Length: 240
Image (cartoon, rainbow, N blue to C red):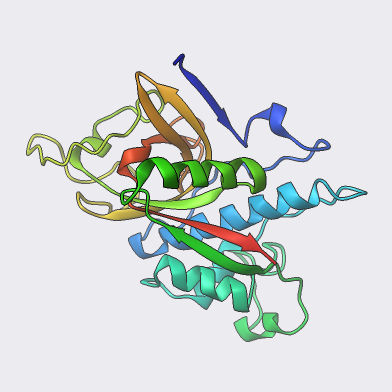
């Protein structure tokens, strides 16, 4: 198979001129908040894909990461975040900004615009990789991004994320520093959650293209590549 790649942030994948994935930007760096950021970007993108196809097309503004951080405090599991999105949904960044003046959190449960999900699916690729990854690809192609979780090994900190696919070496190399560059406290063995926005094939490795919360300066304009065999679990939000 020849090398290839596609992702939802490519200009050619706009629908009716509407961008389907927001520009890469830094998010909360604490380990317990990776899921909050990944789920917000994922649900926002799914709504953008859905509503861009409406007649007339509708633009979905940025949804508030801070809203879900305050709703499900640090340490909440990814399913807690998604369960809240089924109950309380997400509101707009302009209404509940990450920086700036905000009203009391509970005020936003009363009539502000909310983007909810109906439910979510949890899939474990490592149990039946070929079948599960086929299911995930179908969800990705038909309805948009999903959230995936994988463990950090030592080589995560040494590879060039702009050009290299992350493959978990499962070994600890004492010559490699066990912390990521930038303002983050990632260590070997930590599990992170990211938003999968595409897929590819490179050097005989089938991989997911993902967006994390490190911003545009990280990887390839905010994107990384992870070997599909590394992913432990994946979460697919189903919109309301």
